[in-house]
Image (cartoon, rainbow, N blue to C red):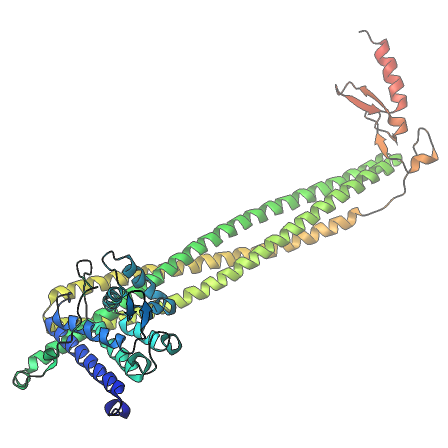
Length: 493
């Protein structure tokens, strides 16, 4: 320990007070740990060394507090510094909320005493004290510069509090009057009796060491169980995301299949249009202009459809790449979790050996059976996690294979569609209407007569009549219109 802590200035009474409080904290913490381990059970509120420990801690926290003037007088309470822990450490928010909800507490002093008891039960008292001691700028609002919490003695006491993590305490504060308790240190508890100390046996020391090992192993086992639960929750979340990605992949595959069918249909329609245009050009040379117009219109529609299909294909490819990236990240995360599970499994075997040795020394067969049951449960959980990791890897391999087949199939179909589109883009000269032979009919649209199948301009195709092959009126040329009128007039009604 530092020299100025051992030999304070005799002219500085504040330094002597700090040293005395630190020594009392040492004695109370040491006595509490030794008596609790010898007792071998969970401590309650009536345990005298525990009560003295809280009294000493109360005096340490009160040392050097600044007085706050109120309408009732001056008030010195250490509840204000303890409230800072909630802002610095989120874990302490639960303790602060519990203290504020207790109905029997009416003063800040009672709330501070309840906070110390809850922090001890949570086994976080040392961590919380270190947190507020490191924030000297915040503590200066509540303490004088030469207070115990502002000097090195406060850091020493925070370090000594680590040893209290081996103690299990169950304190009920609903029936206690924490507001009006008088905190007086009982020095008789810390006066050593030479005759009594000379009668301590070697067996007591062995039992104390075994109990320390037992508490340490139980603490490690509790942390290990918490780690396994966290890993299991993460694996469950990964399985949900993997299932979602698999569903999205199935939807994408279905969309790809529909796009392939659409491409096949477009290909068949394009070939049909080309073949029909060729047959029409061979049958009647005068119908080339009409066929060319319809072919161009059909080509534009097919081209637009092809562009839409290509855009949809690009979107699906983008989604595929995103799913591949997600699968790679999932695989990396699964590998990390698998390594962590292997390490936890090895550490679990080591803990089993330690616990078995400790339990043999204590002849506690009940403890052995409970720990073996917990070990078997954790082993089964680890096996389930390993099987889930293997399943996720198999699903990722299937997704990679489907992506490769998609790229291999779709590239050839797009190239064939582009070659067919180029074969359709042939231009021919427009023709004059064979009926009116008007030069203006070069630029006017053409129609096909539904009776004689001839192609004429719109002026020569303005008439409509029902045909024998159809009930509804159809567009016919002027010649067929006259012939059909005569035919309908001569036929009996």
